[in-house]
Length: 487
Image (cartoon, rainbow, N blue to C red; front, side):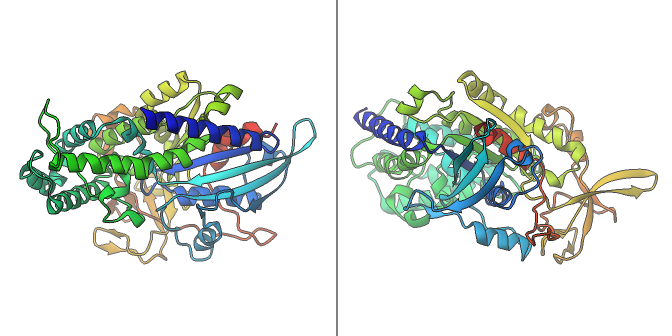
């Protein structure tokens, strides 16, 4: 209780300092996160590129209306945080046609935007983009859970299909452990290793499960092999306190260390300072993996949105603690589908997050859902099969992508019929087999396969020599997240 009070005082003090600084120099801290392989790095790179280079954003009113004079990069305010490697990420996509590497740590980039207000005055807005792994966001609910609660919930989940098949080795070791026996370092190391292997297997694209805390087990960084990452759930007896020196007491202590060393500093130093948030979701990967993955994603999204202390920003709330007042949920990789299915993809994500969205809206936050592609890697075409006209997407699969024995070379362009998503999202959640039949993508040679990873597009140079990155609804995302600040 005392620690929590001290934490509240720290947050309030930091909020008052930030408020004073930003009163005459408005700043928005935009958090960008998403679960593994959702496209966070690509999204941020494309967003910054569009602002700095004047992208094609007809829905972003301030830019489309010519009121933004210029946008430029500036030194970031947090010296202890890595700079987002914008230049190399853009170079990888434009020059090499390679996707940039995934987010492994928190990073930041500052953009200053000079614009003309609606009243004709010259103004400036500072946008701090904060990039962090979605797995860290899923750790925030641990702040309100005891070790015993977390262990019970994690074990219950691991005993449900398809997780139970992936947890067999860990469960076999778990059955041999006595929580009341003296703590043993080797037992703890083995349990943590098998538990981590189970989490890693759950994240595999064949299962695409999303609810995988503790997040640092999958990306330990400089905490690898430390006691703070050497714990695991135990099958615990009820109504018995943990004996001093027991394995149970050891695991509980290390869980508390994880919360103190990893989760609480992230919340205090980064998450609690955010103003706006976008959560990127690879909904297609969950659809490919089946109803269990979609159900798991639904649970994860509810955990994610519950973690936000949402609500409308007021002077009073800003002084006490920043509150995220706009949250955008984005179903990424919309370019893998024909545009006729984009609204359906959006509706599926909205259905998955509907309970959490309702809570956020009641608290006063604005929440929107969009299907987007920050960098569009395909184009649309129509192909004929017999008498059928098939709406296709055309792209270049990444080298090494394979379909029924055919391995793509990274050069050959392929036409893909992605099928149609169902009108009713519940068909997918309930496991209606007919809802999945349309998702089996088919090339013009009648080869069945699922969504292929494709290379970034080959770009034509604009008049000033700077390539314009094609996108789907990136401008709509920008308008929702920051458009209200250009008044």
